[in-house]
Image (cartoon, rainbow, N blue to C red; front, side, top):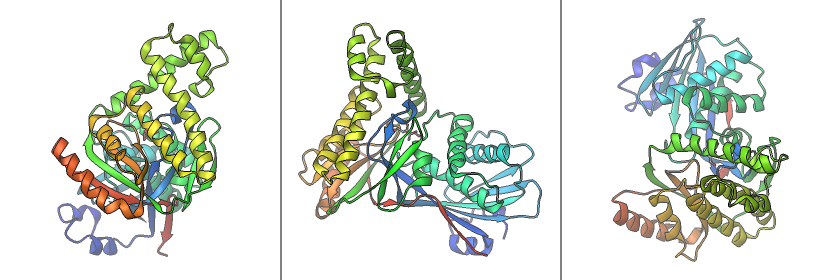
Length: 392
Ligand code: GLA
């Protein structure tokens, strides 16, 4: 059976289809969570993400063509045909993640020839756990492996991010792709997005667990407002530089500078910079708290982060705010905040393992009553980054 024959039948016999496809290479590419460091990555700041045990599986094999490829998405029940001689943008978003990566790889090493791929994803789209980075990195990793392209991990991370800038149009930072590729089981990554250097911190949350609550909303402001935030931060830097020429990103700005300029600065730019400067400090404090297993301080940093994201950075939404507020009435929850770009997606909650079931029942009922929407809970664990298995 060829991938194209799958259309319409995908969901009926997935396992048999993948077996018949007889992949040479299977890649597992995880989603990611970010404990703290909201919107700091494209401001050269600090973030504290890790990959999770929910993944996209990508099955690869070479075909006999020089330039014809097919990529089948089981979730979308669609097949993307690629001509390697003319890789260009599509009008479908999921295809652009792939096309952008293929072009990025070709620019570095033009040794890719015809291949077929099947994508099977466990990651909910638009939920803030970066199914997009998982897809980009899984694709980059798989093709690098299949065609022995010799591209470094850091270069794959960067070209995956660039695919998102150039093909999809989101001017994202580097955090998602970095976490997806670099993470290690039972650890979190403290990433400095200025130097792109990182350390791995062991994560021992016992008896607490990580509960994601997916709002199941993805307000369509997400991409446009995301890019607007990035420009606002750039404008803030330009303004601060007039008084403090040493500041070349919000990472180097300090609280006293922002306070000094409060009355001179546009109010929106003040709020954005105030948030980013303090969020960087919170990431550092949260990382220290994790190292000393001070989970109360760690949780408190998450709450403070959410408050700032909602009131100063203004990337939350009523559904996310409701969930974070609701969690504050539960003594078994240490901290909660929105994750990802905002305007929908998930909250991350640090919750005692014995309280999970009861909390899910209560919060789901309350959420449904308030918004007439279902809530999707997912318990996740920190896991390793993108990896593969060969079948030959
Ligand atoms: C999205 C982007 C990341 C980061 C987060 C916000 O996930 O892809 O680069 O900016 O939003 O922290």
